[in-house]
Image 1 (cartoon, rainbow, N blue to C red):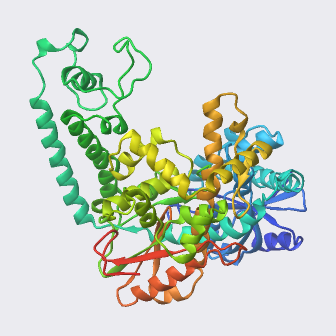
Image 2 (image 1 turned 180 degrees about the vertical axis):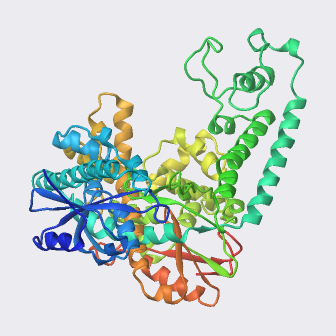
Amino acid sequence: MQLLISDELSEVQQYLQQSTSPLIVDIETTSLTVGKGHILCVAFAPYDREDVLVWWPQDLQEISKLRLSKMVAHNAPFDKRWLVSYGATCRVVWDTMFMAYLLDENHPVGLKDLGHRLLGYEPWSDDNVAHLGDEFQPHVPKAQQAKSKRRISMYAGKDVHITRELMKWQRRHIRKNLKPHEDPVRVMREIMIPAIEPLRQMEDNRLPVRLGLVSSTKDKVEARIAAIEQKLDASIPDKERWPDWLQKTKPKWGTTNWTKWWLYVYQGALCPRRTKPTKTWPEGNPGMSQEDLAKIDHPAARLLSERSTLYKQLTGFLVPLEQRTVDGRVSTSFKLTGTVTGRLSSASPGSDNPGINSQQIPRDKSTRNLFGEIGQAWIEADFSQLELRVAAVMSGDRTMLSLFEQGIDIHTYMAERLVRGGEVTKEHRTLAKGVNFGFLYGMHSKHFADYVRESYGVIITKKEAEAFREEYFTTFNDLPEWYRKQRQEAIEFGGVHNEFGRFRHLPRVYNSDYWVQENAFRQSINSPVQSTGSDFMLISLARMATDLRLPKLGAKLVTTVHDSVCLTAPYKTARRVGRIVKDIMEKADNDIERKFFLKADVTISRCWGGEPLAEF
């Protein structure tokens, strides 16, 4: 690798004009967050050359003169965000991180790992130069600055050189190794790269927070926890009744051995699950998870379960939300390569910009009510029954397709089948919803009772679960054949594809362990459905981000969670915004051959999950 270093914009422009090939770009910054630091240098590697150029702008405003029409990067959302913040024009045509993820979602997609694993380069993590950004200060000797500049240039040069080699490897691999219906280039170019912009907008807009309500909610949760612990403390037996191995301890509520003894021995609750035996618990360590406590019909378990839920809400959500809200808003960071299923993931942006994981915000109304903005309507658009609609088309089940073609509510339809002519209540429809989503991917009846209790709060017997499963597959009798086809594809090609050509690699279908293999087969059914639904959401978001009508109406994208998107807009334009968003989502399948009967429900309220002002 020949390394060129320049401070002159004219030299950089001359260098870039010598090639019309894709241009690999990487930046080095003093912070991960735009606005918290600045760009140190920009590295370039034309695809058709062997050298690289590292540019150290004398004036950072010169970055605005960059016109990158064929930009390639490893993690383009990061590099593009920074460059655009300085006024550069960037059109991303390839992202080697995205492509690495599409070609193998089961392995790490960091550049150093890929460079070592696929190309044989020795890891260069020891050359990490993040801390050197502080050395470019007036008080630092020129010789030391020059040394650091050279070292950072070498590091950035390696990044773009190896990214270039990785892109070449990926192109060769795609030409020779794709499975039938696999099309990673299409997914990258038509879904993932266009999704960069809406995710950037949501990250920049940030979630509006009702801080006063957060504070009062936190106070209520703390008070309730204190009341529960007071009640629990009152039930503590005299110490002489404690076993010898607890005599030197103090009562501590949670997943401690003391709580386990108190619940399962002293209170006499039946233990639903045990793990490996220990010295303290030779019969097996008793389970104390939320799922375990939910299965115990005992007032002591219910108190512990409520305390656990509230404590998690307090320490894992309310306190961080209050502490990390700045100027009435809290940050989040989205990732397109964070799950093996193709779904979007999110996290707190980082130590210099702490926020929350918006994908994990609890669904309950009281929690979501914490988000909203004075003077702005909250607009939530949610794909209706998206996975069922996708499964209907992908499986070709005639009953499902007929229901969606006629606009019949599939949950009400199933409820009518379950009650067999009786009156359908709201509770019956809730149960039917559990039946439809639970059995869609082939769940066995023995697991179904736990599923509907945990997900929908519905209690059924084992016999009822068996009857519901039989009714489900009698009604949708084309699904088993689809399951067989998915298993066959997984065995033959080592994975399965979705509607857009996204391929889910399932190497465990060849595992000798029956249960490991069966789990892989279940993934061969649900992965294509979930990833197709997720791709419809990403397509919709990309179209919203480029629809000029929305900003003219004062609309802002603020977050997305699974099958829904949330925006804010002035009350006077909220209905028009909702109509536009609904139309965009319901046409997300208009560029593919098969139609999926997409339907989006829009709710306009004063805050997230608030009382509806309008629904359509």
